[in-house]
Each structure stands twice: as C-alpha cells, then as structure tokens.
Picture 1 (cartoon, rainbow, N blue to C red):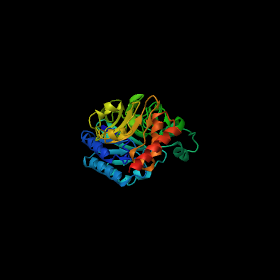
Picture 2: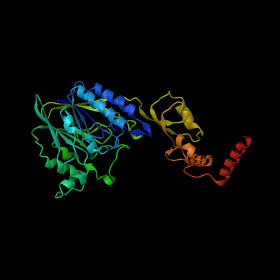
Picture 3: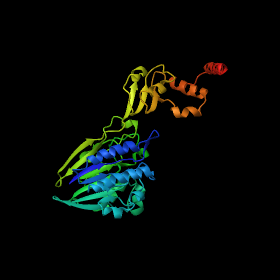
Picture 4: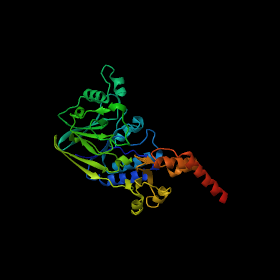
Length: 371
C-alpha cells in the first residue's frame, strides 16, 4: 500500500501580516497532482493555523479533501496543537463512510483503522496532539509528568498488535529534531518525546516540526510544513514524503519537492549590490551591511523587491541585526521619533545628543518656513 505523508499545512496563516492563502492553494494543487499512484494520504496535524480558522481556510481544505474523495483516496487526519480537536472531528463518523478519517476527541487510547491489501492487514493509528494534563485526567493513577510520559502511557494502554504492520500519525516534538522559529514549544524542553517510545510502529508519520527530517531511523520522520512559515526556514527544501509499504519490514521511502508561488528568501549584502539584483516578487528579508545607509534605502529596495517583508542593518555600529521600522508604522511617529529610531539602529542603540536633535529641529523649522 502506498501513502503520501504531509503535515503542518497551517491554512490561514499570515507571514508578516501577508495572507498566504493563495500560496497555500498553489502548493495543495501540486500535491493533488502527486496523488494519482498513491492509495492514502496521511496528514499529521496543524491543518489550520488557528483553532478557530477563518472561512476561507476551511473552504480551501474542504476543496482539497473533496478532490481526494473524487480521486477515491483514503485520507487520515489528526489534530495538531494549532487545531481544535472538536472542529477537526466534526462529522467524522459521516466522513468515514467516504474513507476520510479524522482523529476524534482524545479519549485515552489510539484510534485505529484497519486496512487490507495483498500483504494482509495494516493498522493506521491516530494520535492527536496531547499534553500531559489530557492523559492524566483519564489515567490519574499513572505517573505522568512529561509529554513523553503521556505518549508512552497512551501507547501502552492501546495494546498494539506488533505482529501486524502498524502506522502511527502523531504530532509531537521528538528529541533531537531541528526546530524553526515558526513552531511553538514548551519552555525547558518538557515537550520532548524520546524516539524509542515509537519502536512498536513500522512507520511514524510526524507533524509539528517544520523542517523535513528523519529521527533515529528512516521510518520515523517529519514531512515538514507545506510552506516556509518563517525566515529561519528560508534555506529549507519543502517536500512531501512517499511511503511504499509492502510486507512487514519492507518499506520504501522517497520525497518530492514543493515549488512556491512566492519563495521565502533572505538577501544579505551591500545596498549597491542588492539594487543590481533581478526584480523578484518573492517574500524577502533584506539585511544590509553598509556603514552608511541611505535614509530612503528601504523605499528604494522595494522597487526591486516589492514583497520585502523585513529590512535590517548589521554594521560595526549596530554590532547585531537591527530591524528598521516598517513603512506602515511611519504615520504613527513624529519626524523626531523616526530620526531617533534610525540613529539608534546606526549607532549601536545610542540616542542622538542634544546638539544633533537641535540641528534636526532647526532643519525642520527651516523647511516649514520655506513652505
């Protein structure tokens, strides 16, 4: 049986206040084109970016799943930490009649769906995102202090038949995986779950971490997020994961890249060099290294990179990356305030002295007198 594993769609997400719905639609259409030779789709959580998703995001997901039904694909979906398990499971019993299986509200054990192919029976297990408190309420007698304790107890209580082929969908942070800035995590690493907890499963389809990666073994892996959802993900190659599961112990895994309507890119260098680059409508963060930066450098760079989302400066005076105030915030500050902000960026957070401020005021008064 052949599976396509994806996760972390985050439908409805905005990047620096830019709506990504068209970008997400573009990516989902690519995925639909990749499903023809596959029997089932595994979606490992964070379907939406918010527990209360906007109507447009729900409509996009509805059209995606409807097309999978038209193609006669089986679909398995769990709730992630960004999802509402109640909303995700709405109409789940009815949808199961069309081979669309949503994780139900967590009740203490894995939800299992049995399939059959020429190699025999195969069990798909659904584990929505859980916290220790969710499991402790159901098993108060158990020692459950960490996320690892919680997941371990649920798996133990579920009595998995390890002689069968078993696939688990889960949405947790596995110890050793590489995070990105766009992910939520618990302070102090309390959300860590050791990979050994999942040893009883032949393949574990993970969601939650946005970088595609395997953990400890080939068959324990994150598919990664649908798109790049932060500039820390700029160098990542987003992909979907293909799983060809034959008889027990015989699994072939491959990946296929996702292309973007707009890529997420970091451009770093000197102003004159960046101004010579080709026009690009990608979502861009610019980092300048010039010692002296033109006051209107940001506005000029927008003629080359119209979707520039962040503009920062690193030089001998700033010492570290300093974000320059976005254009849409200008109207809320006076000329003096804007000058102070810019001066601080250029001079390692030091404010201008009285002499410089007086000079600025004299220039402003002179300009107003001319008008």
